[in-house]
Image (cartoon, rainbow, N blue to C red; front, side):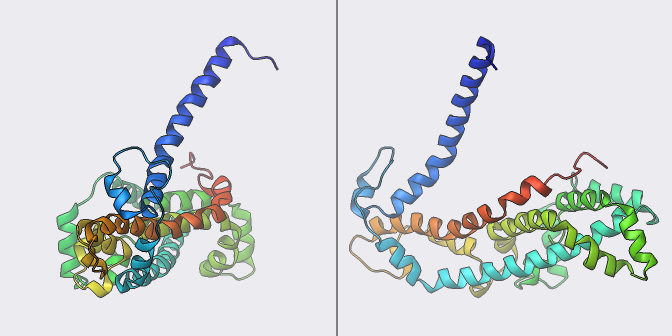
Length: 289
């Protein structure tokens, strides 16, 4: 079909704007990657846009991977991601299933109260005082429990459950299944797409969580990777990585960039494997309430 002049201009403008967005999005990561593998002294003298590395050196990655704090941070982060995401999915599924059933007494009132929390909250200080009074400060539970259900994710999952034919649930109950059986043996197995989307949302939140550990954790052995990264980025000396060289400041700059790559790369590699589920389940029935 032949395009009009206006349509062609519209396409050109779209391509230009999208290309600019891609450049603005990709270049920071390209810069960080190039800086992490550049020669430390050349990187320190560089003051221009970096489209390729200034020399080549993997010394920063060697120092990063030799640092026990990085390994400890990785293990803690993996714990928070795996255990936290499992608890998030479990609790969100239970709440979404219960509030998706039209025969639940007080369902509309509870939904209004839950939706209210998306726009109004107690804030940082009341939340901290609550966690402190519960005796959870400086424990892993302080990271796992306060955000165990995201209201936004709950609403998406509830809407998805509402779109499942009620005849399927009724037939299961006629065969003697209770609500737990219906949820875990019927609803969840046919909701793999939405579960994959929710798992990614929760996992990314746990992986990038910074304020929670910063507020609630005191022991370094409980620090996740993001807090370890913060400590390294705030340090202007290579002593933070246990390396004593004459060009400490120079290699320290490389170490900061290498640490960012090491902490970001794993979660970026996971996304392509579950990207297809976004098309299937991210906003299934999102406009239905």
